Image (spheres, rainbow, N blue to C red):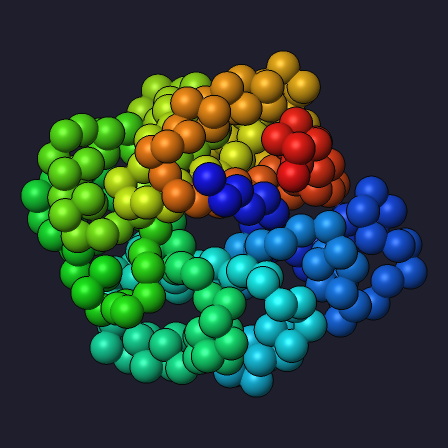
Length: 255
């Protein structure tokens, strides 16, 4: 199984010191990042669709074999309207990475309020169709989605399921690892239960212990033979903890 480990985003000022040189310029952060990781999630596209030239500049800084997963805009996952206006510029911004063979999927992170229903399941499939031929990975935040209907529908539609690690609060998903395509996907958000519902940067203020990472190593080992590749992205980005834990996970998995 080809395993790629990285972080959810890379351009954070509070990573200066913990990971980046303290005097690094914004435009040089990615040059440093690619020395340590072979994949990254581009999360800025959730907030604003960039010009293709911006994505082309990022792609040019990445080495051969580097892989990008790009987040779907909030118009599709949270607002769920005006898709006709959103799609053309979004698809256009993906072209530089797609043409270089480095775009390996799109991440659709749906909100906690988006609960399982027949209509919502149909909407997820509609997103998949609208974004073809790119692979789509769906992340759900409400535990009503973990059921056989979701699993069968995602498998049939070729949509990847995103396993998550987050606080064990009522309504949130458990850290169960399974895949609906030949590519498994894991996002580790941290387990900061105290600040989870408050949102903001403190939601992702969490440092995984060696024991917690070891638990994920065991889950990953059980998926051997069931998936051809796996992405593991750390989203506990506060104060560079995502980088620290991602590097620790790389060592654990001998990558």
